[in-house]
Image 1: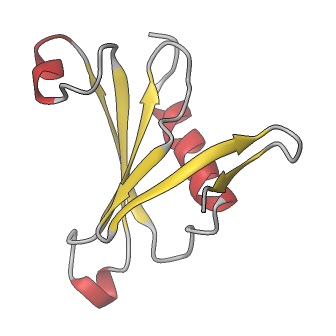
Image 2: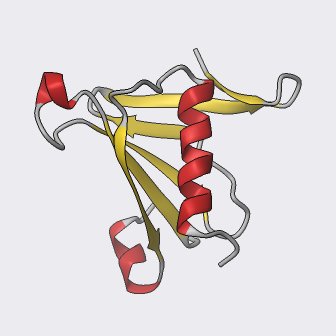
Length: 105
């Protein structure tokens, strides 16, 4: 695969910073490369991807209760246009003019 665990965590952090989701309460980054037999649990994906997660707002919800998940294509590094969090999902896109990720309203 083209990216390391550290690289995809940094990319996911950038996404969260760009869309103003990042704060000091966003902690415990983790990334898992999903491929092979693990793909059967993700029927909406047909290629290997990194599933990156961060815990947030532990002081409000408890330890490890609230997480945000970001899918990043393992080969291209493309970020899935939908982040999943405790409240549902956040639609995003990359704004080339401003060189940053933005929320889609």
